[in-house]
Length: 265
Figure 1 (cartoon, rainbow, N blue to C red):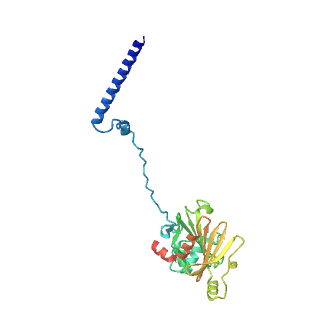
Figure 2: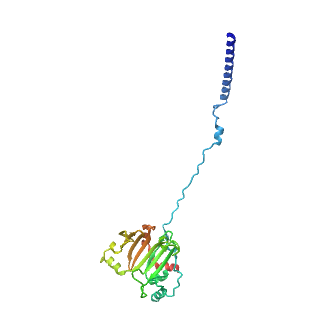
């Protein structure tokens, strides 16, 4: 019994030794061929599993203009036919004859430039502006009024098709006020906020624009710049959505209205 068990143990050991000998023989043969026998494991899978491609994007910087040249705007009253541009007296009678119970009478820029010599208008307007309305203001006797002689509106849509608070971006009022302009320039009168502030004014300060004293009045509805350029007083109002820097830029870039009229004729 013991001898049989010993023989079986010996056979098992012999077979195990033979298997080990075969394994090492194969391993030596593979090594002799060069490289590690395990180095190719996973290579096939790595050939089709690639790193994900991340798309690259290039940011395109666009600049939106803050102002547009006034030459691009459409003037609502340019179609008014006028026969007396060369005769101021006859022109005023012609315009006043169009009155329909309102002191603010629709007039073309050509008529206003002829009625108010040397009147100026901004060379630029806020981005989004498209239209300009223009009126000449009369007293009941048919003469041009002094305190607000002309009025202009700059609109982002066709005039009066949308509410003023939304579409009317800018209001410009021009008054004939040579006396006050002269008094301020000579020092006879002091430039103070009390001159133009009213109950709607929340803040007021006097700033310098184009080397001249300019009143800056702020209210909930917007801001107003006021300045004198003999013989006129200009009031430039911008809705609350129009930045102050745009109003100052417009005030700084005034040009004769007659030059715009000449370009359009």
